[in-house]
Image (cartoon, rainbow, N blue to C red; front, side, top):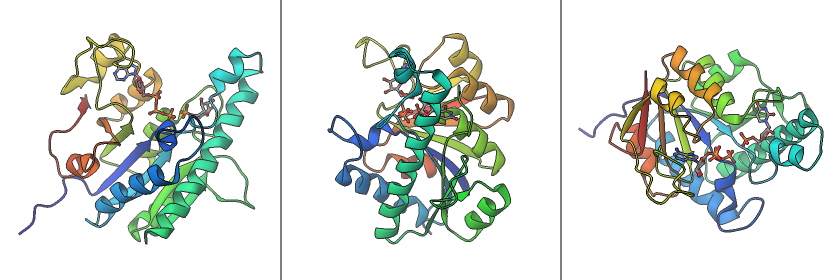
Length: 239
Ligand SMILES: Nc1ncnc2c1ncn2[C@@H]1O[C@H](COP(=O)(O)OP(=O)(O)OP(=O)(O)O)[C@@H](O)[C@H]1O
Ligand SMILES: O=c1ccn([C@@H]2O[C@H](COP(=O)(O)O)[C@@H](O)[C@H]2O)c(=O)[nH]1
């Protein structure tokens, strides 16, 4: 008998920046199709999947604020960017045969339906992938925190941070080539060491909800499925 997935319901935090592929900005169609194939491989196992998508490929509030823009205004622009990514992701999923729904934390009902927790859970039970756009709906937060929040709300067993690096390192591996990767690390240690792969708010919420996080590279073929099957992949952040 084939092995069963370790998790029945997961929350995938998908990097916005990863959608760029090798482009300098925006969404690379081939990269998007590759990411969707990774998600489909897990959906085909019968795993219920919620997705929170980032917006760094289009706009980050901090970047706007650093060029003189009001921070909250810049953050709302960042949240709108995540809704665009959610729509592109849902469209690519539809093309691959996946049934996906977008819900937004910001109210733009002509475009996507609003976030309604009960409805999201029903979609998951029906086997639909639910893509949460608009982050938390509040400025001064990130989509990592949205992933911790939605993951807690939908009763996910784990948050899977699908990003550009293959785990949590002792320092940012893009800046420090001598950084080493942890196979496992506790929330308290990750927060205490100020490891920048996720913001402290997201780490703290997951810690308090006893919701583990697995950080892995979305560019490594089959990595998402390996995490879901309970194999060693990336870094497990645990209570
Ligand atoms: N200690 C660390 N270990 C691993 N990565 C780190 C660390 N510190 C900083 N980073 C950086 O964090 C990045 C991932 O987090 P970031 O929030 O920037 O991106 P994302 O969530 O993948 O994208 P987006 O915000 O667009 O959704 C990595 O690309 C890496 O360069
Ligand atoms: O809850 C949230 C989530 C996001 N934002 C803003 O959006 C951008 C893009 O999100 P990333 O997590 O960086 O991918 C972020 O920089 C914030 O400006 C937000 O305000 N609130």
